[in-house]
Every structure is written in structure tokens, then in C-alpha cells.
Image (cartoon, rainbow, N blue to C red; front, side):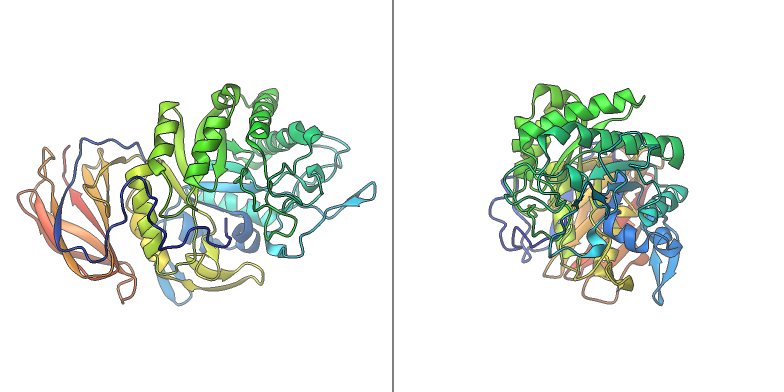
Length: 485
């Protein structure tokens, strides 16, 4: 989630799984390895939450994010990203009083980051009672429907904080001590009831079946405090296990035994390993997929997360990433690290609309004003538009190249990032059974130049090899047709 950077861009000494490529690297050849199988790609996504609340009624933004059509926006034509994963945020806020008790609001909280919750009071767990208000949060819900109608096919329900009245201090930004649980012990089951009830109501009334339910967001973090800037709640690992057990029981009790649980969405790769190892065997058995966030950036043991999760037979997503580098170069760097070492099968950006370089389209969620797409938008397009669901992720041969293969179309996709110096990169495809001679279509994004997402047919593959010059700070995608593994 958006916050002060925890790891600086220069702090790349603790990768533990391969160093970030040097900007001064000379021309080189990469040999793509088709024998690697790093999973079948499920897709790209975003969390709705703040930008969904602010802009959820806009069709043009839904077209931009959830189709691959060309869309006119702000005097420019944007290539739609074709995101297919929607993370819907179950809110924690309401403005009613319960027996004289009311929500406590952090002095640093903006209204745009307060997501309306459906369960207003503890008087009744019956979703048809007056304790529940299913009309709030209409804009975020509308955006979810717009995404569904445009082809999004994976939906995840997640919580940043339990409802305020379940919190120790009634503050959904966090407690007085960021290292202590802010969920009242007697409301652990009630938080599970809240999540399961929303999932059931969506199934019965919204035309949406959530593919996963996630009761946490960065739960072990200690920055969720009463003076925070967004919804959040600390859960000790033992408490996480208890809530997961309750959530499975509550989903099952509502006829949703087929609906899987995902957890724990820890902020850092190293935290994810620690939390996973600390969960009870009962809780682990109830988790179908592990989510991790990418806020350790260039640091952390991504490979340790993959090893722990794959050994347990669970799916793995990077379910949230964001930073304030509007150029997109840091996005590309961390995407490449994730593909090479974490091996997720899906990847989600936190807020695609936000200010200060955090969004891929500049926006002010508080005032509801929009700017233009920044360079990061077009960098994200290089990955999201070309590495598509159903493709097999293979080894691009080196740290700056991501490779994906579409068996049905016999298409090989290569996405390569070049950093601070111009150079020529040669692609050796000799390990593939068949690579016809012919034209390679490429798309180029120069983050500091005029090419935003330019398409070219000026490259030829001959005898299973081709080369391409890269200006500095450029991302290029290549599609090679007729390839057989």
C-alpha cells in the first residue's frame, strides 16, 4: 500500500537471489531456455479501493484498464492494458453510533481512503437486518462490474482492516501499539463472518463469485497505528491462524466450501516467509494461495518465498506493488526480479490511479481530478498486453528478460529492459525445436524519449537468432511467431 518507501532504490545489497543488472553492461547475448517451467500465467490486476471509490463510475477508465482496446483519454490514445484480476476491498468505515460508541478517525486520514463497510453494528449478523447496509460503496462495486463486463475473470475479496467497531480502539487505521493486535479477541470470528457474508451476498446478488477471500493486508507490519494515513490492522501470526480457521468455517456454513482462502499479503518477502512458517498446520491447510506484496523492492529473498510456498503445493501471487517512480524503470526492475526469483503466477498493481508518481495514470483520488498517463503506464503495458493468461513462463536467459510461451498460438514473447546505457542485445533461440525465419514484431517504450508504445516490424529472425539495439532506459517487447518448444 502507498506509504513512505521502506527500502531505498540504492539499497540493493541484500537480494540474496541475484544482483540487479548494472547500467554499464556491454552488448550481450541471452540464450532463452524453453525447458524451464515457472508456471502458467493467470493474469494481471489491480486493487480497486481508493481509485475505485473515486472513479468507479467512469467507463473510459474501465476500458483503459480492463480491455486491450485503444482508448482516447486526456488528448492521447492509450493502449488498453487488458487487466483480468480485480481485488475488491471490503471497507472498514461507517459513520453511525452504536450505544454511544463511534468510529475513531486518524487525524492523518483522507476521506478518499476511508472505504465504507457493510456491517454497521454488532446487533445482528443477519445480512437482511438493519445492521447491514448494502447500498454503500457503490462506485467501487460499479467498477468491479464494469471490469467483469469487459472480460475480467478473477475476483478477490480482501480486507485492510476489520470493521471499526471490531477494533480495540475503534480506529480502522491501527492501534496505539503497532506491534499489538488491534482486532478485539472476541471479534476474531466476527471478522470472518463479515468477510464470508460479503462473499455470500456477492454470489447471491451481485453476479460475482469471488475466486479468493483474503482476511488480511500486511498483517504483521507495525506501521498500522492510530495516526496512520489509511486503513490497516496488525494481526500477530497466531491470531492470523485463528481467523483463517474461522473464515473457512464461516464460508462453509454459507454454502461456499468451493471458495478458497488466500493469505497473508505480507508487505515484505522476508516477512512472508516468517509468517508462513509461523502459521499453524490447520491454517496452512485452509490456504489455497499465498499472496505477498512487493514493498521490499530490490531487497529480500524472493527465492525463499517461492521455495516455501511451492514446497507446500500452494499458488503464489504478488498481489500488490507500488512506488513513486513515474518513469516505470523501477517497476520494470522489480517485475523482472519477481519473474526470475519469486515466480508468481499473477501480479497486481496497488492503485493504478494515484498522484505523486504512485499511479500509472496521475490522479487525485481526494479531489476526483485526473492527469495524464505517465511513462510507467506504457512500461506496464509492455508486460500486461503481451504476457497473457494461459502462457507458460520460461527462462529468458538473463536478469533483464522475461519470456513467455503461448503453446496454442505458437508464439514466443520476450520483454527486455535496458537501463542507463545504449546497447545491442542478441537473442539466441537455438534451444527451441522450431523457430521460422521471418519478421519479429516489436514494441518500444523509451521512458525518457518520444516512443511511448511504438510498434515496429523492422527486425528479422534468422537461423534462430536476432539482435536489437536498445537506447538507454528502454523496455521492448518482441513477439516471435511459429515457435515450437
